[in-house]
Image (cartoon, rainbow, N blue to C red; front, top):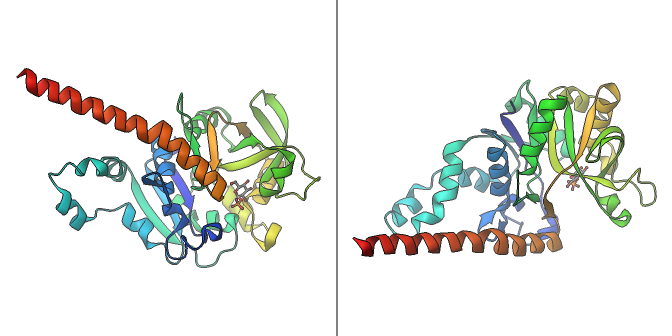
Length: 294
Ligand code: G1P
């Protein structure tokens, strides 16, 4: 149903300087996995097989990461380190990766428009990799949104309640409540001035967009910060048709900030890494027991 996922990944990641001076922020590791790989795994879980990555200058390691590294793989072949490449190998084998360069940084709307050639005329997902989303007890956020898309067939944005003091960092929606976790968007404002926010429902970096969004972006003038904002294009789409805001199930970490990144790292260390290690150890023990039994 939705096969393509777009990853705008051309930004500078200035909040993490000097780490991001020559390394793309999307490659920052959360425990032992780069941020973007979490996003790709979430898209795969939601049934998408085509990952369209909008890159910029100095982002070639993103391409290398989703490719074979013959020298390394040859070096560790047959050793117990090979298992550490299992996840990324599976990911590479399960998806197709295409890349396009955004030559100028003109905002998120412009980044999405740059991906038009890769996406074509079909509905697609957008993942902002520095928003890391997890839902350990159920479906990932994109998968939840794909299900909703089947029902509503219009653009969908994921939202989360944030304190009023935080709304100025986000696109903020106003909407008609149609279910306890669903709103039909009537207004949305990119990074409202404190005290002027239409609600405390902030858009996070997960979107399902119908392809007419590209035309709306083309008609969108530079907005907040002098940039072409996806929020402004989505408002036009909402006014002319329908956009749904969805209060997703799960947790989201703002890995664009040092605090959020540290929280995500601690969370993933405890809830993913240690658990995986525990499973691997148990497996190893069972294999040894089987070996001994023979
Ligand atoms: C972008 C969007 C904003 C959204 C946010 C979510 O802003 O423009 O509407 O709320 O992502 O992370 P950025 O954080 O890139 O400034």
